[in-house]
Image (cartoon, rainbow, N blue to C red; front, side, top):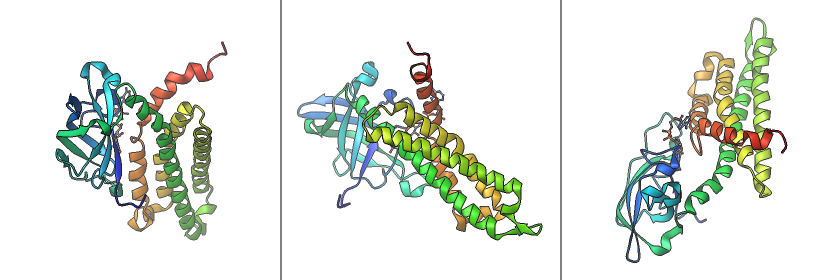
Length: 271
Ligand SMILES: Cc1cc2nc3c(=O)[nH]c(=O)nc-3n(C[C@H](O)[C@H](O)[C@H](O)COP(=O)(O)OP(=O)(O)OC[C@H]3O[C@@H](n4cnc5c(N)ncnc54)[C@H](O)[C@@H]3O)c2cc1C
């Protein structure tokens, strides 16, 4: 909590993202611990973190059941940090990768054994999905405020931009999606707070965020005319973050998979 050490969570690899159970970073049992080898990619804070909660495969033939989770200390031998990626935005996240080459993890550093680690990762993911959806609501609220401030003060054809119904309604649509997104976030967050099943609710919130954030941000930019493109308004950063949010903690397509898998149970006829 003092901020002396930074942490990160490493599931993804250069060759495995959505399909988490296909990770290749391996852990081999040796005396007193495990020998870790492989590469992780697209890890938030990889550029600066000291400690990585790292998911590895202990038995390639076992699929998700073979995955274990270790605490990896970047200051130890066998850890090689990569450069943070040059992205279209979101530089503060410092996403990047690292390699493990014969990294020795003592038995005590295993945080979750094979069979449990995959479930552990899935347990935390609902909260992360709601958090990303909430971030998208924040992006939309900020962009709408910026666009409204600009449009209220600029005149065209003898009245303020906001007094033109076409533009006013377009920003009304932004507010409408923003309120719907806030509602989905609050509902899913409430379920998590109460320790109830939030799988579908979190997927709905994140999917909706993935669907509306980018086009509604574009509506805000459009409402400002060419001025919306100016860096000083920061809307380009919002757009980059919205795109990023469509991948992190499960892509929009993975939310479709999740919702699709739960359709019958959640909305089908009562048995
Ligand atoms: C900025 C940033 C930070 C990140 N931070 C972390 C982190 O801290 N820790 C971590 O472990 N990971 C992190 N990730 C990785 C993130 O979890 C992955 O990007 C995500 O899981 C998607 O994997 P991928 O990018 O490899 O895409 P892929 O899995 O290669 O998928 C490519 C495209 O195909 C689609 N697709 C894949 N499978 C299917 C299917 N069955 N049906 C339909 N469509 C499909 C995907 O939705 C996507 O659009 C981060 C990513 C970004 C961009």
